[in-house]
Amino acid sequence: MADIKYYDVILRPVVTEKSMAAMGDKKYTFLVNPEANKSQIKEAVEKMFDDVKVAKVNTLNIQAKNKRQSMAQAYGKTAKTKKAIVTLTEDSKDITIFEGL
Image 1 (tube, rainbow, N blue to C red):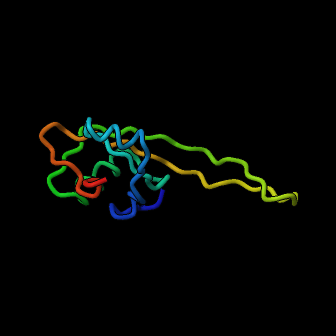
Image 2 (image 1 turned 180 degrees about the horizontal axis):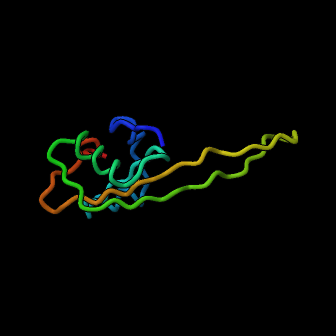
């Protein structure tokens, strides 16, 4: 496994109705590097955002889907991805990039 730096772990936040509803429970959803493990995700969130303490990290591997392009017999697959649901501690501050959404 390659050495992944903390700034390469989190790719982008996931903004859906379900993830926005979970923010009330201090759960934030991110799309992360498929090579990253839970301890790397925890370290990246704590380093990237000030005054944030992570209590728990849940990960989901999303497999590639088969896709067909138009009427041609061109087949392919979408990319494999990985999502992380990060739960913060009760005394932790909220993550600022989600404010105002």
